[in-house]
Image 1 (cartoon, helix red, strand yellow):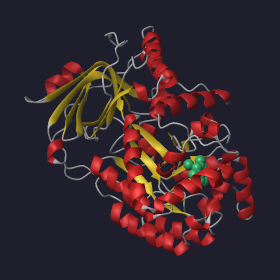
Image 2: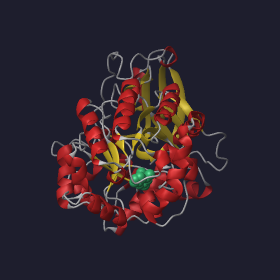
Image 3: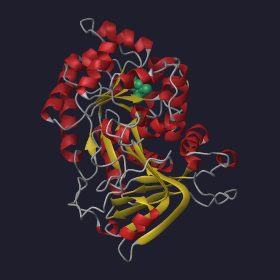
Image 4: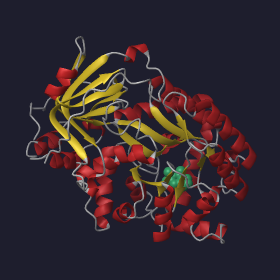
Length: 474
Ligand code: GUN
Ligand code: FE
């Protein structure tokens, strides 16, 4: 059951990574002990022709970190042997160490209106999302929400996210500054929106171009931060604005696009009316050069085979947001169809349309939605979608997503005993797959014992579960 690829030798001292020079406090060696799991490929595709396993699992494993970067991942004995004298040891025995979750679609300005019921997407946007986003004209409010938002990501085990701001450039400045202080790997952008929305949230084609360009210059590549060109969706941008977004995309080849597509039946019909010349909703974006590698479109429920082929060709990903799709009554993504077409798929919470910051809850809903479409999502593939698949979709697979030597040591510690029921049910689990399935079905933020960013614990659950019996992993 456990796939054990050849153990890589500890890497030589790496050049400073894309995050730039490592701060002194992070330059020390750390050795983390626990049950270590990470993915090398999509387990849905099984073992490839060359016999390369798609994941590595080390019950009683070790993760050796220097300067915030992974140096070695493997069995405990190997990790211990590779650690130089003076290495700090952190014991998470009996817990699962896995890469931090990657949330490929979330709106930080909607933190304060999560769980607001509406009559479908368009009504919900008017009634709750737009008024909540209005407050981000106030930079101080933006800062306060950004602080809470980043803390909530970490509390839920999410160490990397692709985030919508609001139309206000200061919303992005606030979020980026908080993420920069924490050392989080974040991708974010200012919403471009110049029609079909309230006057108080409207920019113009020119101002959205100018503001986005300034923000790209300020934040794209600043430490671990990246920018995403963020037209809200085709319904709220004029042709001129989509052209401006396309110009930005062309002028900045390594800056991705982040938007929504084909989420809701009424929305798809609106797009048909607004763009009668377009073959499909997705085709609108394609005509403006907005389907580019490493870009993410949330939802993609109502795409056809040609759209899926186009996304696969363009290396443009779907963010699957099952709690949002259920909550807003949007529909059920056919996950297998998307994956089989070769479309990159990552997981998104889509808070505040989504109902939870928890990637475990999101995977639980993903399992249910896939099931309703006749596909049984394996727990291994689910964890892959929430980690390495997210990194691949965002073009960050050289930096994060698994524990290959040289990667940034963003990881989390999952507790099998987080609640009495989870502890009781886990006690009967026979395999890694069973444990993963229990976490995604019964788990939530309570199961996240710690979240580490560049090897530093930025979140640690206070106290210890009193009902936790010591156990060794299957
Ligand atoms: N489509 C356009 N804007 C939004 C939004 O804020 N949330 C969701 N779920 N879909 C959208
Ligand atoms: Fe969204």
